[in-house]
Length: 259
Image: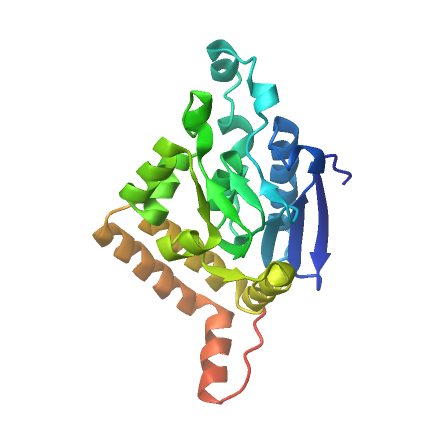
């Protein structure tokens, strides 16, 4: 499929890579880009050969924010009737396979929110994160006030949302927003390495792990533990569980068939 605002390719026939591609706008997120991103994610999610996805941008900007030029003239009626953001930005929440954000440069506003929608973030050492919407007379609208406190805690989330300041990759890792920092020239190598490692595991177990971790943020502890337990029990009905445990016992490498 031909895309206007993103490029798409696969690595080792296992990893789907989506690159945001509006370089003149520092990958500002407009409706067209978000529609295309959702389409690409859904296509990879439906492809049984793909075990993991990566979303990335340019060295200068993962995504510098939503497209303010497009939003500047919107009215309440416009955004409410069109279900702005909800209509185009929520597709990623329905993706069952892991999605990794490989972030270099600016990840601000909607760009930071998109990165947080991914399952984890690997950041280059030049990455900058922030929610500067307060400077525009608005607040984050794509989950920034909800996901950021869950990642970094209330105090730091309040700091970022109320001052609009940027946070370095080092601060983001220390706060828990970023899983790891790598040199800029190693960003895709490290990210693809993580993605390929995930692809070698049982897709069924990987999807169950993602679903269970996400449940931790949306339920109480007792309900979350019971949800985890039931998925854990269910995996004993898979061929991959038999293969994985037999391989461990017999000291050989497991070969999962995602069954």
